[in-house]
Image (cartoon, rainbow, N blue to C red; front, side, top):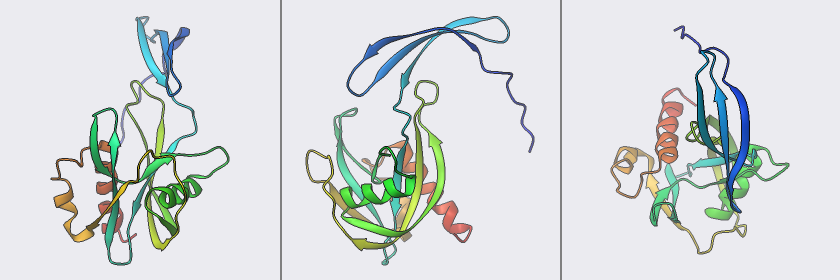
Length: 187
């Protein structure tokens, strides 16, 4: 299928930092589009390191999820383990580290399901979604303020996971559907 591409991206006429915290930098942009239109945009600048989300599948054909506090919604959400890629790490190394920190398991095998962007209109961050198999017990100390609750979910009941009121994060939903595509295509 052929898709029409847009012309070149708009020209950045001016950019400045409009807000900064220890986690976020908000950049104000003055843009000029190829048709001459000028607009003001704001974006959150990421660290550029990227992040990983891991879909762990154990030998009993269960998904391993974590329930953790989410400040944005001020509640606990059920989702797949995730975290930032540390400097010098590959996505697979970061995935194995995060898996050990959040679930207490390492993995012998990783396959990337897809690299996704998150709110690309406002945020330049990218996330690698990987499946992890060949799990073995190994715990690393993470940076979470409280222990995460690990939830085992039978893969055969993946559709019911979509119905859970605390399984709402779009990246986790996408990861679950990407896993199904991966498994249907025969890994």
